[in-house]
Amino acid sequence: MNWNKLENLTQLDEIIKESQDRPVMIFKHSTSCSISSMALNRLSRNWKTEDSEKVTPYYLDLISFREISNKIADQFGVYHQSPQVILIKEGKATYENSHMGINYQEIMDQAT
Image 1 (cartoon, rainbow, N blue to C red):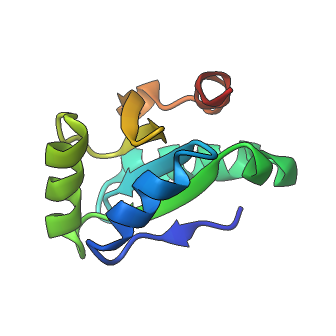
Image 2: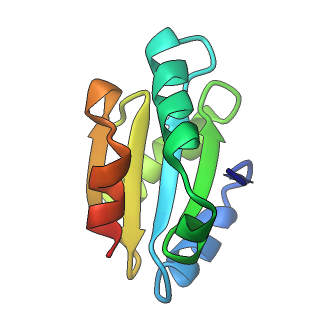
Image 3: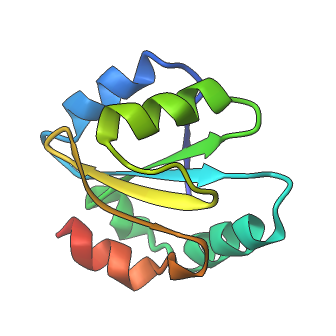
């Protein structure tokens, strides 16, 4: 799985623009949390190469980039959680889930 790293606030504008054509998935990962590592592993194991044609995946290390995580919560109107998946379509958060609720198939179903 080829994650796009989310490391700059200006990327949020790019994500909004990108989501007009194809859904964008943001995975907020806490590098110090075992549940977050497990959710990341499950997503990565299930991801198929062709999924990148349906959804553009972004990875946020929220410990290193907490300011971006806070901006995501404000900009998209979602409550901050970790780990968390947020699906952006046409500039809006259309789906979010966290912890053990992060489910590859559910994400892909919501993306189409």
